[in-house]
Amino acid sequence: MLLNLRDYETAAREKLDPVHADFIAGGARDEITLRENEAAFARLRLLPRVLRDTTRRPPARTLFGHRGGMPVLLSPTAFHKLADPEGERATARAAAAAGVIMIVSMAATVSVGDIAAAAPGAPRWFQLYPQPEPGITEALVARATAAGCSALVVTVDSPVRGAGERNRRNGFHDLPPGLRCENMVDLRAGEHGRLRQIVMSPELTWEHIDRLREATSLPVLLKGVLHPDDAREAVRRGVDGLLLSNHGGRQLDTVPATIDLLPGIADAVAGRIPVLLDGGVRRGTDVVKALALGASAVGIGRPVLWALAEGGEQGVRRMLELLREEIDDALALCGVTGPDDLTPAVLFRPRERS
Ligand SMILES: Cc1cc2nc3c(=O)[nH]c(=O)nc-3n(C[C@H](O)[C@H](O)[C@H](O)COP(=O)(O)O)c2cc1C
Ligand SMILES: O=C(O)C(=O)c1ccccc1
Image (cartoon, rainbow, N blue to C red; front, side):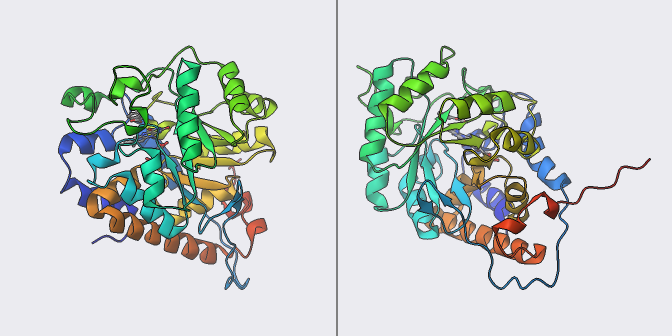
């Protein structure tokens, strides 16, 4: 029975090639951070208030002009056609139905233009690995802008590709025949959407971010900043938002859970730009915890792919509906009547024993 987000993984594994299921589930190296993301949410305890009339739960906040149906976004994930033949088209329709922003991966198996055509008018952002050649980055930005993307999410935690040992054991190094990274087609001469066209480059610096900001009028968010000093630098440079993420435990293993890093990042940013968070969000209570600690919204990664594999567009729709119900339930049970009630006071801190 599909009662919650975790159930979708079990259901999806019945339908997926185990090599592809490993690609989705896996993390880097020992997968310590992968497990820690969920474990850290599970360690936090909520402390509700009572008798506060929670018939009107607070609406989602406005993010760069978009007022969402709930404070959830679809984090960018590669290769949706591994999960469903419609791929990112199906995901985009489900996101549109739920009123949530889809962050389209640069490594999508449907081009961002075709995704836009599948869900016209729906809010979408574009995720970018800046390429060492500025011309290629700019061509990608032009494609995303033409497809109506309203923000750019620049992934900065990948100077090298993540080391997923499951993929190495399974010999999974690129898309199967017939599938391509459609956003990359025709960008480099003689290449046709193979994974290696997406260069993860150790040469990138803050100057690349400055240059990108000059080349676009879209808001630029950084995904993968973990150190408070880097968060301060991002604000200083005029970055528009942060997506606090450890890439779902797929880049540097043994970094902390994002929910444990959130208080430090929120302090460093001090409300000057929105901070979003992803990694291990599986329950409505996880969403409430992240909002209480200062996130403006949260992203979900793997559950989208599991739901897509389980039931295509309908699967993702239903999964998002379950999450919406859980958030609503958690807010009511916490006694939250408005955004001002979502503070660290919702979290229980055991008294230190002397
Ligand atoms: C299969 C898979 C593919 C991903 N592809 C991308 C990607 O193309 N770009 C990116 O910035 N992050 C990518 N990520 C990371 C997600 O955006 C996100 O940070 C992570 O999945 C969140 O954690 P969660 O899966 O626990 O929700 C990917 C993650 C997974 C699981
Ligand atoms: O697997 C990933 O985490 C990821 O970010 C990615 C990026 C490009 C292509 C395939 C996967």
